Image: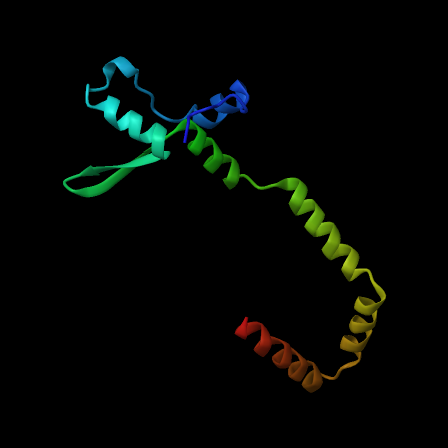
Length: 122
């Protein structure tokens, strides 16, 4: 995986990386060249300490994808909310609410249990 960041704006790169510590390439040990080559080819490597995984070193491209994936997609969430809201405004939902409020407490309890059992199996 190449570390191409041409599709990401510099401001976005700065925003997503500003809180990370940085080290100049000249300060890295000579062995870092092989690690860097592997990261560029594979996308990430695991760094171990005392033979146990200690951290992951990854390309900027992979890091940016992870950061962007963790941010909520507000457009998709808005669309989902609008769909749910529209469904709740339909005639079927209105009739279900009228029927629910017409139930006595025992009937309401039975209906709740009947709906909870299939939901628990999902």
